[in-house]
Length: 194
Image 1 (cartoon, rainbow, N blue to C red):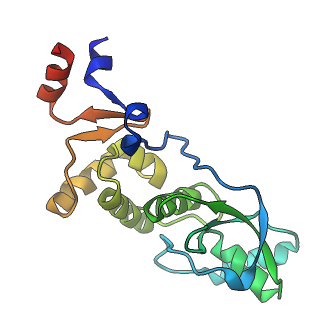
Image 2 (cartoon, one colour; image 1 turned 135 degrees about the vertical axis):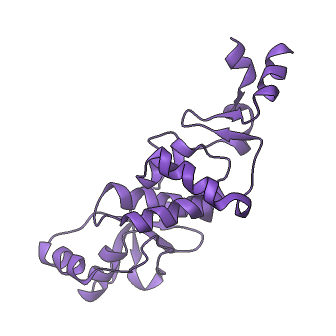
């Protein structure tokens, strides 16, 4: 009961809502979008598109899964290789799921998508992405950032320490369960006592 009192629930404050370990932001139904209407990704890939992966996708000779696009910017979140293959094959349209959230969450979705399927991100790319997520989502727990980036919690914690003053230091961090927990235990004890 005391822990319940000492914890601020994300449901009580929409600004604190965060993804669960299986963060899956709502995506639209699949729609067809003109290839020419889409913009390059804000990708976590430092090395860009991989020619060998492009060849492999092209050789599959079948319809590829829909890509994910940030609706407000029309930037590809996940699927640049699939988009390039569609363009190279002269396709006018491509199947798309739209993501409606903020750009900072679109980047997180891009990282998460690229750590779970397709051409994997390198460790250096995942570490750089974790640093960027620490800057945009400083209130997320290390464990949650580790889950999204495919890094260990220990690695994310060390990165947070290295970045020090370059990132905000919120009074609480949001855990994988969506709850915000104060970093200062005295704050929690005061809440529990009231």
